[in-house]
Length: 371
Image 1 (spheres, rainbow, N blue to C red):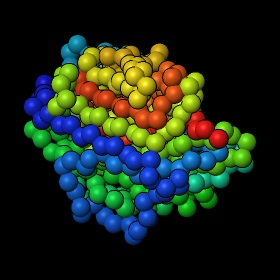
Image 2 (cartoon, rainbow, N blue to C red):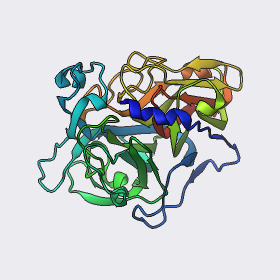
Image 3 (cartoon, rainbow, N blue to C red):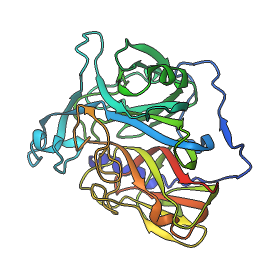
């Protein structure tokens, strides 16, 4: 990440929202017709996308769509070492598309495993994708709302964004996130390796660097699993450094009714976080007063958004390719159990960015519910 990203430090964005317990026990936004990327806006405040209380849970598949090809900065770690997990920032490298499908008609394609448990029924599925449109080249924003998706063993199908697309252009980057309801597709395709291609992201080298990736998040029902409250939120917000209220993003989740000692997890998608650049954090506070700094073995408390795709600090599914340092794309799942040790009716998630800033795109939460 280069110095030109420091423009985010002046933006000072905060969005606080309270999600009421009056939301129906199972509710999702109506699917509506798919639309291309014509309703773009710079800032999309975080809002609830889906919520349910049921026996089951949340799973996801995710991957980055672009990786380093060669070093550009004289002091950069070797690209091969960065892919294996060495600290490195995307602005230090020439970045090039990842391609796993051997199809000459796609210019990027990556795969990831979706682990829907045997015997489960898919309740809801949503695909998120995003990246930087301006690096060594400039991609047209008009293409933000379209990707190609292939279910396990299947052929590509066009998926169009069905909601407002976040799109923020500044002096260094041209960033966006789009999403679509893909519930029927995932119900049919099921568990296995999913492929996503044709993400609209730019390659090359710049002071800001290239980044981009996708996540498929799936809510499912299973009669043999505990009763859980599962929720998905999304938006498109800039995260900035500092301790004041104007420096980050707070999302408050109400109506949890989690007993003391409950288990839980939270998943986050963020863009443009750098491995080894310190200052970004995630804290969770319950209404009982319990406050924890969220971290794990691969995501330190002061470098939480560090270009990793992990669950509880470990890889949790197969990816192709399977880089450890994803150079500007994060899709991590964290253990919420410490924040729930005293029970919780609500949780407040507080995100702050590193000195050069980041973008926050998705938050999903799963907690045990009282029977």
